[in-house]
Image 1 (cartoon, rainbow, N blue to C red):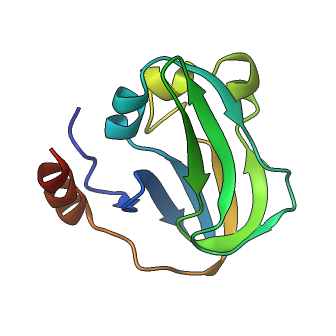
Image 2: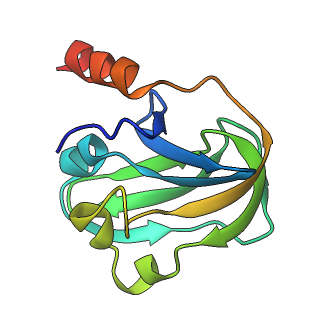
Length: 125
């Protein structure tokens, strides 16, 4: 899967789509591929306030548990509760139905463009 050009990325392999003041966050196709089959997602509470870089939950796969980090700061306004029953959506559609949370953005961080994220992936491999 290619890296979608309309998203921004973190070095810890989260993606973010900012629309107005709301940021939708998930993990990248590369991250879900490295993890393998996702079996559980720990979601934050709606209303929680996160700073950019804060850990807000975890993704557990058959191979490992990986912490999740907020790419931007803000208040959690929605979590993808469908992941509680169907965590495999992260594997099947990481940039669509596998989104993890939405934040009301209060603090923007330095994010990577799609091109910069692709460079990061090349450097890591």
